[in-house]
Image 1 (cartoon, each protein chain N blue to C red):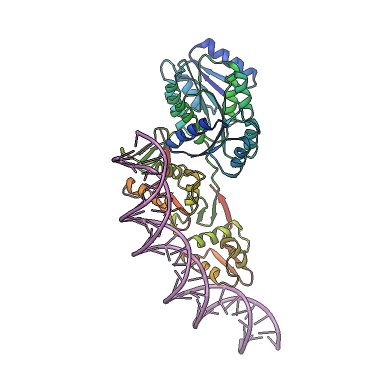
Image 2: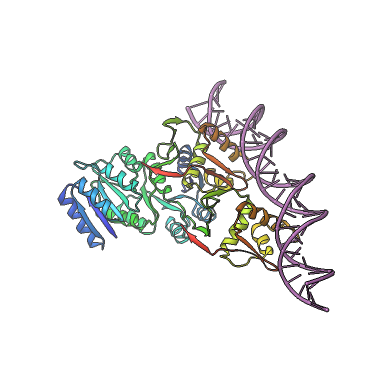
Length: 225
Length: 225
DNA sequence: CCTCAACTACCAGAATCCGCACGTTTCCAC
DNA sequence: GTGGAAACGTGCGGATTCTGGTAGTTGAGG
């Protein structure tokens, strides 16, 4: 497993590196944000251990870069502050996990391992199609920068459609994924929700109907900041 | 996003479920390990929230089952004990994340969301023959880059023929694979559908007739991406 | 008690499907 | 080759299914 440690405290950085090497991992070290960013863009690391409080380029920026690059690299954020809001912020930036200093070393190893095991690429936290933007963490949808108020179900439907990346999603699957197990299989509520959703999203239409199959987003779906 | 909460303390389970629902997720609840295991094996959840200390079937066992099933489902382990060894154990069992009780709710939400983002299924390959392209997921067919609108049956027939890779497919087999079990065996609808399909695909002809045997695609079939 | 998301019921219009009738091609026996 | 039968292609109209849309009801949460 290929690891990058970005940490400005040199002693700590080396200690972590030594410990992880003992666990059989290949560890590189960067002691400032700039070289960390460079190394991350050159080498395909499995996991990047990222100190959030870096001088120069901040850990948040590096995290964003890595996530946006679409690489398979996982980010484990390290921070001195262990407050809950900080954690939430870190995760919504696209970090895959979060660990507060001081931490126990076995826990660090376990989390790095857990991240390395994950094969599927990390999805950046913002979905976009055309001039439409959806932020799953903030639960905000905008079109041409204008915010659009959606109900929970409407948001859920749009999120599933965008996550599908333009593939057709049947109303059965929408029901399955947005509603819970008590949903009546014969309900027409999906259709109604799609309709109100379309009305709120406005022109030109974002959601295509594929008769007999389901719905899909018309514009190509991108993953941005 | 489809979530399962397995937690024996009913009050806590419902509190979690309510909170996650407010975030727009579709949440099912199981208050013991057995039903939890059953539900997890029936429904394709994005994330399973798993209490480790369950009466009956333990959380560890359920976690193992889910991981072994090869499903895309992610597991977030919940536990009363916050000791480091426990955390390490949980993660090495295949859980994707770990949270110690008591936890702050925003953090739970952030972690669930981070896990749910990763559950994106693999994209099936594109089928191509000559200048014809078929995307099974997006349900899109193009010729020379120009999109062609097909009905469900037409698309199904073309898909089966392309999947056959140029081999002859009898109209009986087409009927069997594209239509449902109630299809009249003496129907002429396959012939009609093949006709409209040919008309839409245009010249030069893509589908050959093998008199007495069935149909096949003329050009060699490739898989591209 | 009020508000609003969520849902059901229902209708109208459109797309799709499919049987039927008939024309055309292929194949084989002679 | 030639005649005929079987298999295949094709246009049409009705039946069916599917979808968009409206209005009103229910129920949870504040």
